Image (cartoon, rainbow, N blue to C red; front, side, top):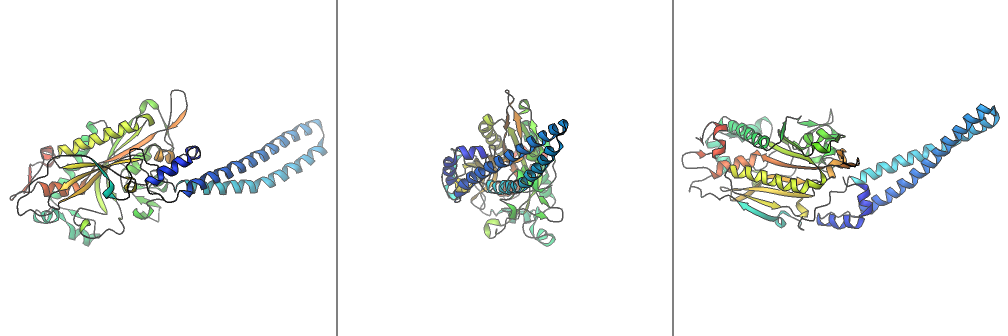
Length: 423
């Protein structure tokens, strides 16, 4: 969440930047400032009363030492009266602080000055494109038909066992999943990321820390008995590794990568755009996360973008990089680049990665800090990116590389898959 001191000092700037995100509740900024004023006034009242109690209590001890018991007893009654008056002030303070915190988390992150204005994905800006769109054979088909032809993915079986959006990967389809996961992890590890294998369920504090709660509450699967949430991305458990910790400045940047299944309810998703692997409730993804010095987060962001671009280039897929406009950004992001790959059989672009800089929005929630050279405690910045999400990568690998006889795989996957083709 945004830092309270920053909001107070830059209220109009915050309102202006939030308009770029098409956030319509700018009155919350004024409400936060007013609640903080009330908090400070009530805190002052509490502190003054507590100071009187402390002074009177000290005086009682001195009076008793002098043998002035009667005066001391009168002072005790005075202290009792002050303590009685302190309780409602403490309750009022707790109520104000609760309302202040609940209002603070309703504010999204403010967008970077690099974020273009706009309301929908149509307003996103293409940064650059790479790769070459393939020319498919005349009888080319989309990936759901290829999956059936080569017995790679059984969508009907997934529907039987669980429901729509939970496919079964079979035989060489399962092997391709495994090959991609291992390749992505190795690619990240070679770039200096440390691999983790985190839990795929998290508690409420972890989901709050990365901003999934309360904003995306309806999009997560919730195990109500234990109050655990199935993760929508490895970002959640991995970033929370450093929750409530002060890291050493010399240890920054902290680079982490993890493979996990991901779970998203995707409420309201239906129609041709969600056919096959285009949109799933459960899918596999390899994630990269960095915890960095605040002065280096934007340079790190560009470095992460280049890393994922090289990964896509190694898969020989046509891609483009978009800068998301204000209206298409996530609640927590300050700047997001999306990667899309071209699906030749479907003749459309499919998102396969988002690379985001959250600045201190997440780390303020999680209290991930470091001490600088002067001993001052500061918040770190956090970033993450998909490296990569598998479903649409698989869709494009199958579609773009189909021939009359088989599906040819990019050279980077030959040793991982154990073959150069799927036939």
